[in-house]
Image (cartoon, rainbow, N blue to C red; front, side, top):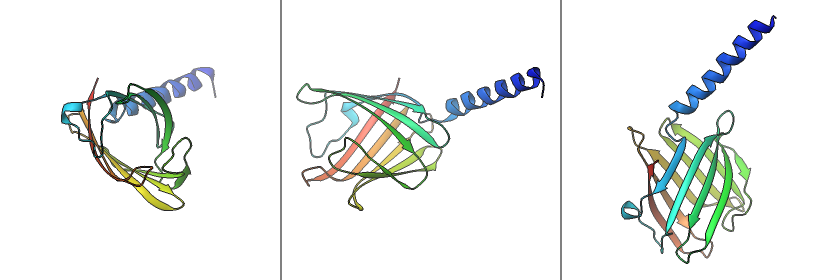
Length: 156
C-alpha cells in the first residue's frame, strides 16, 4: 500500500471519529442548573461541571468537577464502557462495580452495584435539541438513606 493510500485512509478514519463525536449529543461540557434540579436528600452542591469525551469504541470519559454544599471541591475522572457488563469501580464508597449501556442516541443508563446488589440506577437523557441533559438517580446513599435525585444540566 502506498504512503498516499495509507495517509488517505488515516485521514478518513480520523474525520469519521471526529464526526461521530460531534454527532453524539452526550459529548460536551455540561453545567448543573440548580434551579431546575432536585436533590433528595440534600443539600445540593454549589456547582457541578461535567465534561464528557469519547474514550474509544462504545465508551466515554467523564470528568466531574464540583463545589459541594460545604465548599469542598471535588474532581473525579471515570471511564464508562457501554457494553452492559460489570466493570470494577474505584473511589466510590457506595459501589464496587458498574454496568453501563446506551439505550438510544440520547439515553444512557448506569447501574452501580455493591456485592452484586444494585444500589443506584442513573439514567442520562439528552434533549432532542442537545441543549439539556437530565440525570435521574434512584437508589441509596453510602449511609443507606433513600436517594431520588433529578439533576438538570445545560450544555456549555
